[in-house]
Length: 265
Image (cartoon, rainbow, N blue to C red; front, side, top):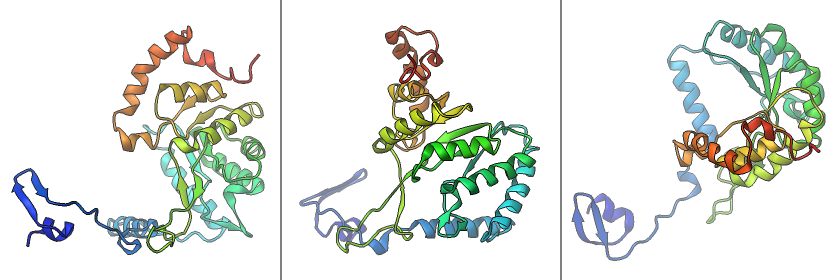
């Protein structure tokens, strides 16, 4: 019995070099045990790096975090093709009481100050949308001396296995990205752009040139594309090419002529 026959639980009508023809297709069922979880992927990546000679660090305190940041940023200071350092404070890697440092204004300001003390390059802080007051977080980052903001990171979500009803991700929750988060991202950029005086790189659900225009209109100075690259690896050059036509439709010469038009009167 061929591998394909076993996989699809039915006999093939014909087998060809390019594939097989089945009498009946039954979609293979995947159980939760068959998924490689986020924690497994992370562990595999860490083990691979350790095998190459990298040191594994277990960060459990803010002091550990500051020391690790100092070491890493001092290394990046001497890398010529690194123009900006983006620091993701949106993941709960270090606990401050019951709250991750990325959702505490006090902690995020302290982290920003610590980074700015050692960085010779501009520092942008990536903000989490999973906070009560995104404006307060942005102001804390600005007070810490950051050169700019990137926002937003992913929204917290859960995916359940249809058969077992259990969470698929080992950590139970994970980050939701893609077009669904764009309205949240636009709202947060809109609010923050009116409250701080540092530039924002907007992101979250950018799929085409009009999404880029929306972020700039909400107050961003630049836009980043993430999830769309997994759908179409050539999406960025396509967006760039299509932007010229879109801007012509709007009758503007430069995209930043649209910056903040959502709240600019």
